[in-house]
Amino acid sequence: MSKTKAWIMDLQEEFEDKVADIIKESENVAEAYASAIKLNNDQHLVNWDNMEIECLVDDMWGEYWSDYQ
Image (cartoon, rainbow, N blue to C red; front, side, top):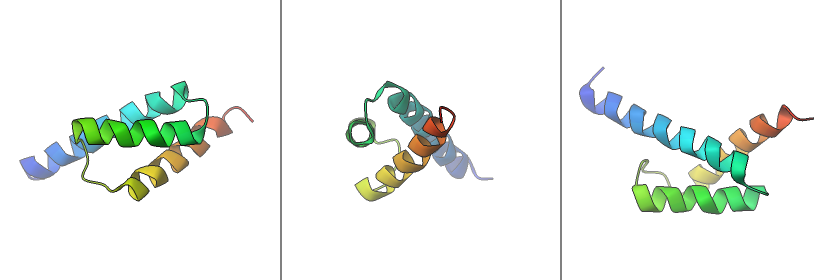
């Protein structure tokens, strides 16, 4: 694997870890969307549009809260 690809994958993993923390702290999914989008706009960890970020949040939100049902 090239160093660039490894670096990009590390950034994506870092972003996903931070989004997981955002989900734990959010009152609802809309708040999680806004926080995750703001995180990406502020830190530019991934080159995704807002729809892709919302899809990630949806997936992670469902996975996190499924443990509590």
